[in-house]
Image 1 (cartoon, rainbow, N blue to C red):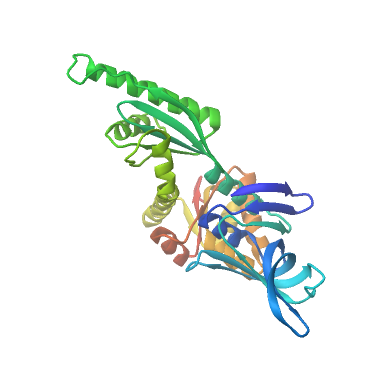
Image 2: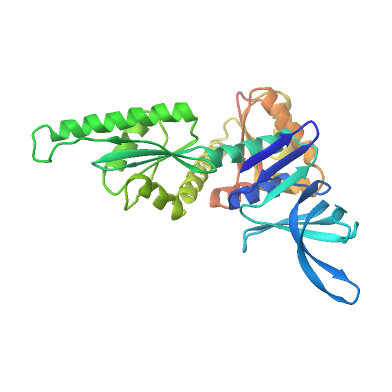
Length: 344
């Protein structure tokens, strides 16, 4: 997600959806009654003339928001409140938002909405990629563009030389230190190590031992050609998504493990609300589907109160998706749970 402009005091934010996950995120943020504007196409009809489809900048008040998974399109239907002279106000129009489209949203922005945008922006804009083999290691930063940082040459001797293994270990240590420095310098959220050989696997193992979370992949090419291969294959998006699913699955599994042991756990809206109000919650877990349902029922303020109260007492708040098995299981259980600091 690219946040092009934001003025939360005036309630105006302009964004660009860079991928399908961004569209799904906007589905959770936009509610009935919000104002949405952007460039779109519309059939303009005139007397004695067949309708002509043309581009127009239209602002509407949202009445129905739907994410079409079959076509990966966010559909927003509502009445037009601003537009060209030949587009009647009060008539209905439907925005079909796809990857790469920009829209402006005007609404009362909740803490959840702001955090969701920031989360998506971080996931999209901060990925460090290192492509490594015996010859060199190329580091690149993926934001809204791909930037080559630098390439480090290994200068390894031939395999039959006595100090070959020692030099390989030294080379790997150099690359590991570079990766850690680049993570700190660029505040990279995701780190992907890839390449055609075994070096990538060894680097990932060493970084994991040091507590640096990385994702391993494979490329046939090296250097910036390898970076472009990784991005072009769609593997980058899939790997980051898989990593997110893995994190959410572990959270849900821990939640159910504690339920089975009947230890420091609460679930159900009212029980969790009571625990949050008492400041007894260590970790609050909420299904994204619950967010959508409360928006549709126009009761989101109740859920938002719980989220804000939890954060004010230092509670960690986790949102669980519904596009994986753990998320589906969690929503069937009510979609809201709490891990407690102490028994109440």
